[in-house]
Image 1 (cartoon, rainbow, N blue to C red):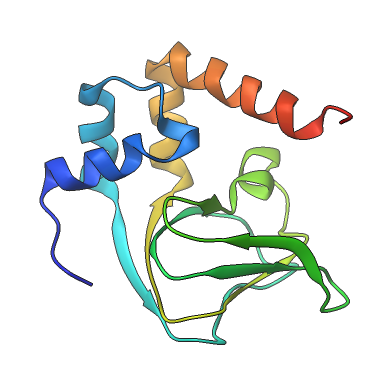
Image 2 (cartoon, helix red, strand yellow; image 1 turned 180 degrees about the vertical axis):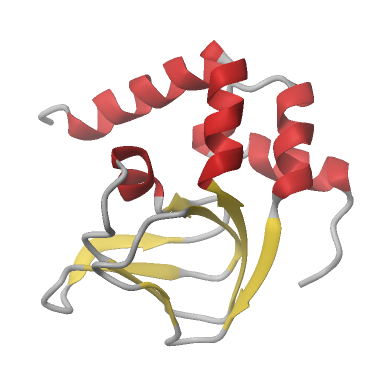
Length: 139
């Protein structure tokens, strides 16, 4: 993965729906905590049943979210997509497996850093509520 500056990481976060509404100060705080991960094609990133401790943000590549029976959940995520949030915020084990469809560059963000920011930023808490109400509302 190409080495990104702190400001590059902050702007990457700004493009991610979950962090879009945050001010630059908060984004820079989170950007400092991002851990780069390189994943090869067909490698599992999240395995169903494992403890949720991290949120993943896709820098490049494509990730498939798979149902427990191995079927695609009709969800392929690519650049600026994120996953791992559902189980993380529910404080449950993952209920799906995430697999790299291509070679991927990701950033991971530990739950403790996200929860610390939520305590500091009511904007993030409201943004999360809005995102989850959209995701879970009948279409």
